Image 1: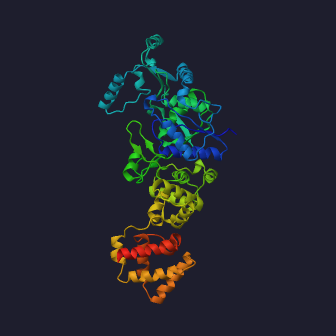
Image 2: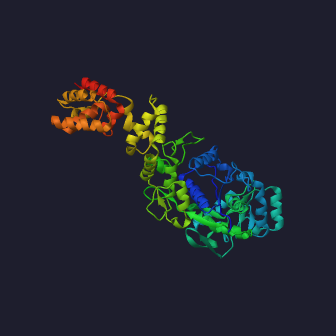
Image 3: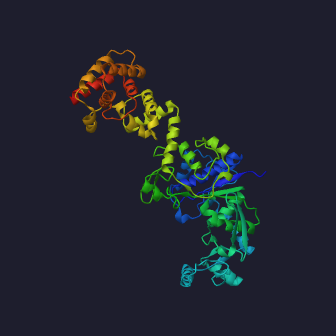
Length: 505
């Protein structure tokens, strides 16, 4: 059986969109499921769109996601180099081969001449395509003698090399996700393969590299589906066997109308990039999932299910479980709507399942860095364990637990007005006496004491508990009161009650 070899081949033209991360993930899952290899190749043939720092950003993003490559410029491999700009000397020979066998031609058309051709088509309500019909009247080697072509080349006239799409041909293709596809050649344009600056375009470099790197499956986004006929024809023209193709469905806006973009994230308040990105040209900062507090495992789990269905009700998958379950047969054809609330749900699931000591350490580090709170890992762990069900992110723990680390300095006026009654101070003084006599200050014992005391005195449970919470927390929020008191400890609990009584009397 032929070795499974796939590649993720991004262009360093900016930050990596989550759609690109999903493409890398599906390639990774497919390769590992089939005991194959995944290659990272940087496709930087278009130097005009190169963005400094983008390549490093791509590598760091994929590493954060846990996507590890078997071959790349960083880890090495037998088919390198893995950056197209380092391979540019090898592309010309394949361009020359296509020229020699009549599958490509030189085009000397100027920008002005092509613009004039487009305008002429517009006047006749047509769309200009440089194809089997229009090329007969344009300035290219198909309409020139060999001598004229040689003369132009020797003079150094600007040119491009275009692929010669065959006329009146039905191109039949198979996509592993979309099935059989037929396209008529007359609807295709003669794409540029090579430019006079010595650089190939994406189409030629992509085909040559995939062949030389022995890529068995090309798994890429739906936006490349229109290029599939050209690529199939290029393989045939070069006498090579084409790989298997699979075109993934689009990631759609939350409302399903159109492809998910950065503007959607800006408008609706969620990231569309894995990591935070600072545009080197403008200094504008775009948010990232990592910096927003997402776990990489949750991010990957969410992405895996955007377009792929495991065929079961299971939603939470480790990377190993995804590898075991993944198949291209269960990747859908239609676009997948992005749901940011569901993304937060995934993070919540991973947060509450984290070992308590790991979550506690994360919260302790967050407290130390962001709030300069003096506490211990042990105490932060107990607090996080108590309230983790209430949050989606580690940084949200603070809003649910700040009162464990700092006593109230003020009391919510609305809560005071509603919950602090005429007899509240007297009741709280009674309670402090009872609490001071307790030896076992556990949550269970506190609950029992409160229950027995309120029953004996026939006090309203709601009135007492709300007033007590106000004094301990400063407002009406927080988890179970006995649990709060146990973590605060007897001394701190009594101290807060006494200060609160004095403040509110």
